Length: 67
Image 1 (spheres, one colour):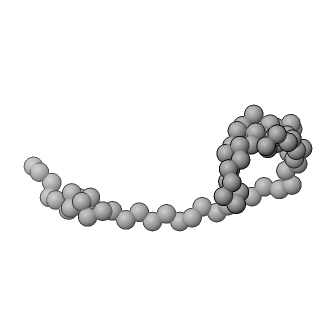
Image 2 (cartoon, rainbow, N blue to C red):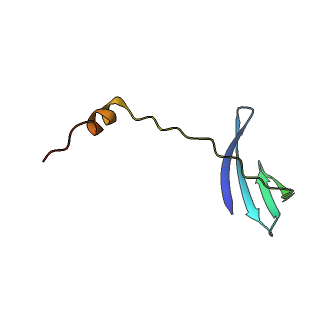
Image 3 (cartoon, rainbow, N blue to C red):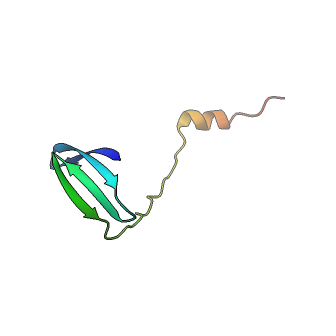
């Protein structure tokens, strides 16, 4: 079983999710239980990450090597 804390419209809920089968789950929310069937699944595209070195890092890498 997995426990999640979710926020909906500014309200926090603790939900427990128990896998019942490959696409079936029992979900418990605020004292109520729900039988849930997974209808589909998508992996969202990862956002491109651009790394910009800080001035301090650039200053360290621009130094000539010691002999």
